[in-house]
Length: 475
Ligand code: ARG
Image (cartoon, rainbow, N blue to C red; front, side):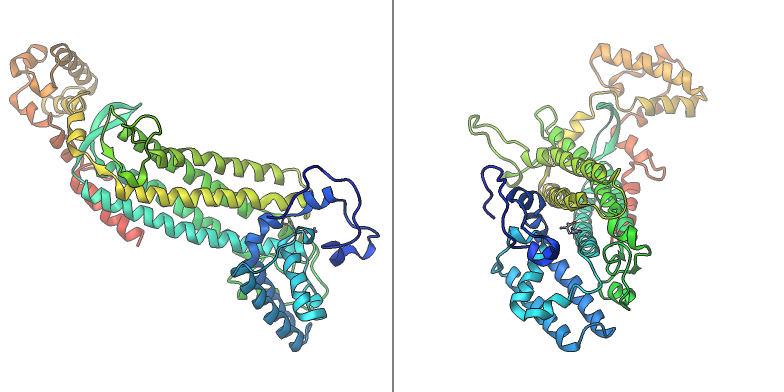
């Protein structure tokens, strides 16, 4: 870390650092406070690989177009490759006085190869350079996160398969509603995360255009080949408008929006893990690997990882808000406000990478207490809807009447503190004389889930089919 002055300094410095690179018309260097507010190297050094990759492609194109000699091009490429190695190995000295990653690299290049370094910046500006670097970085982050998300999806598919027939209460309003299987519940998250994956893929497709060669904002008189640099950097095409190229960050906004929705999904899931692990539920337990103890209460086992995932979404939604506010009201084209696009994007990216990995870890780690889940289905009259459906189907009763009859039977069972299937036939017939023995066959939770064979339903065989389909989709 660079040393920061403890209080804002106001004195002028003589020219040094970055102003050596652009200070032709500047008589004196920046005030220390100017340097401090202007420098972004602490954050954007993270772009060094992308920055060097972009510069290599740019220099190669300049040589091919006859704008740069082959000798200069080779010297630049060798120098950049050396610099990448220096940074990789932690041997590079980043300087705050050089503002950002672009000028830190270029300044070092000058030390290594001399004046030829000054030709690298022909036909480009830091404005198109940073836009290119940042797109490359976000694209890489999307690829990494997509792979991690797929891993989480596969962890869920494996556990869902294992528990395709494990019954538990399904909830609405967190009140017991109808029996479902644990596998079916987990598969709901597979669907959510699958859409998150789709959003990241869509974002990547729209992002994959190359701003390099837009130069400061208006394009360049040099005979550059933007299609060549776009292709060399794995972009589908160059961006179509030079002003848009240097001033737009909607690719990052879209990425942060996708991360925010993903974060919200993970947060819901994390909350369920906290609930399932709580003493009132005890549906699952997590091992020492994903829990912590308390420094004062020896009996405690806390689901910290899940709680942290539940909270991390705040950082991500905060980042989205931050960047939206930076971009709104910014006149075309580039404004330095845009320099602050990176810190929130990096932070949100890190938060989600951690969260997805932690969730995959917890899904694989959790021990499922199937007995507790089944026990919990004893309460809550979960098969009341099955009873009402039976009345409709067997007695041709209008559903509203069936709902009413069922309500009376539930009240009776409640007063006797028993389950619906524990009422006797005679007791039931007092409420509705046409009820027969056949009714009892729909009151068990296994029968209930097995009967829900409609597409997307919770019947174990239907869940198994959904898992097989999902395995195909997320191969
Ligand atoms: N560090 C700057 C950023 O991240 C690079 C672009 C600077 N451009 C300029 N005209 N000062 O946005």
